[in-house]
Structures are given as structure tokens and as C-alpha cells.
Length: 281
Image (cartoon, rainbow, N blue to C red):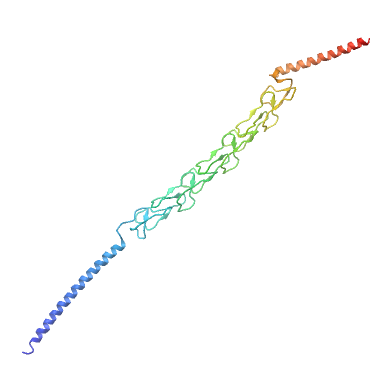
């Protein structure tokens, strides 16, 4: 009888141990479950703070917020980008957070990538197209100021023999440049002259003047005893005052009268000689 209670006590202990083990197992399960949940939540937070994808024009290391705007001279085309890209040559971007670059306007250029602005073509250079990496030299007979989209032909009275020039040259006195875009000046021809500079034509020598050579800056008056009834002449004619000889026909008549007067003078001399002989008799 003394040994019968022992198995009862041993069973009670086993029951208590079973309950403890069950409680421990349940606690371990709950702990494991909560840890897994915590890990899941923690992983989600680190991968996507705020859960927002970076918009076009912005970027980040993982393409998620917080995002950084693209710098000037760069762009970000797509959303969720992890890096910005440099604007290519011929394009530029002055602002931040942009999704595209701008073409260099006509009259300007962008030589290198990643530029925040375009550069104007210098004097003597031009560029008619957009998105270009260099400018063009002005042809001969033209000129241009800074930022020109086209070269401008030299105006009448000016010329330009060189290329890449900022301005045209005024024609010298004694010369002219008629057509727009002239490469050279032309000396005034004989019979014409030009006292001024930058002129598109020369002047005809007036009546009673002449211009013998080319490149003259003034007309030469006829010398005493000579006339020139025509304009634009390069020689003078023998004769008297121009005022009484407005035409070549009159000049010929006057020359004939002078010849007749010479004859009368000879006769007068002859008569004088006769009188002298008569007196000596």
C-alpha cells in the first residue's frame, strides 16, 4: 500500500511538464510568427520608404523616393530611374528636374555634352539650323554680327574679299561697288570720278571737264582755249570759252571764225607793209 501513491505523483509531474512544454511551444511559435512579421514589415519599409516611384526628371539609387532632381545640363526621361543623363552635344538644359534637353537655337551651338546653356556664334560666323555643335564662317562678300542665323551680303557701296568677317569695307574714293555681296571694289573708269567713299557708282565728268585716267576722285577742268561739250569725257577739245561753245558743231564754227580772223590779220599786215613802201617812195 505504501508503493501505490508514487505512480500518481509521477503522473502529476508529467502533466505539469506537458503543460509547461506546451506553453513554451506556443510561446515559441508566437515569437517566431511575430518575428517573421516584423522582418516582413521591416523589409518593406527599407525597400520603399513612402512607397513612391521617382518621376521623370528625378532619380535615386533604387528609383524610389526620396528622389533627386536632375541637375542643369542633364535629364531623366523615364520614371523610376536610378541615374541622370548628360545632354548630348548640340543640346542644353538650364533648369533642374527636366525630362529632356533643348536644341541649340539657330545662331548658336553646343560643342560639349552636359551643358546648361548654348553659346552664340561669334562675329563673322553664323548657323541657320538648330541643334548644332559648331558655327559656319561667313563667305566672301558677306558679314555678320554675333548670334547670326545667316550671313548678310555686303550692301551696295561696300565689299568684302575675305571670309569670316564681322563687317564689310566701304569702297574707296575713286572706286565703287554696285551689286550686293561684292567681293571687290571697282575703280571709276576714264570719264568718271567719285570723291566720296562707300558709293555704289561713279559720276560722269561734267561739261567742260574731263577725266583722263581710271580711279579719279575729281574731274579736271579743260585748260584755257579748250572745251568739252560732252559729259563723261576723258579728253578736252581745242576751242574757246565753253559758255559760247555748247556743242561740237558750234565749236567747229568758232574754230573756222578764228581761222578767218587769222587770214584778215595777214591781209592787214600785208596792207601795212604796202603803206610803208608807199611812204618810202
